[in-house]
Length: 145
Image 1 (cartoon, rainbow, N blue to C red):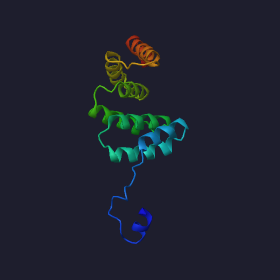
Image 2 (cartoon, one colour; image 1 turned 90 degrees about the vertical axis):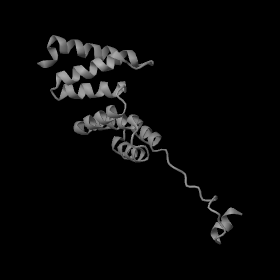
Image 3 (tube, rainbow, N blue to C red; image 1 turned 135 degrees about the horizontal axis):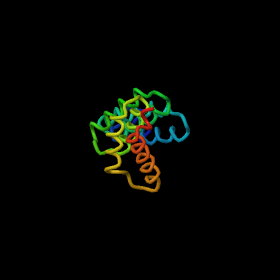
Image 4 (cartoon, rainbow, N blue to C red; image 1 turned 120 degrees about the horizontal axis):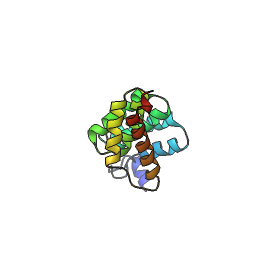
């Protein structure tokens, strides 16, 4: 019956409820498939709906890193940290991009912040060990070479 009411103008508006797409989950699925450019498009749409979501910005930074757009990745990590200074993944990712860019002091600062409040979870230990080793290398001057 709803179809006929809509067809002939009898709709009350309740029949027409647009459904919002879940752009964030779509982006994550596209990333898992390795389609980072399409994932970035979906992340942009998710960010439009949630402009102050630090996790979307962090995910975008990761996708920018994987597509070798390092300046964009750095910019998105920094914006994510403006919104949520405790976002461990953003500190971690930004540290290694800064290290790559020749900013060992900035990298060390973000590694220390990451290690002060590391993530929890099954894979966390390998990230903690990697950050610890990188910080150790920075302290010994090995990363300056």
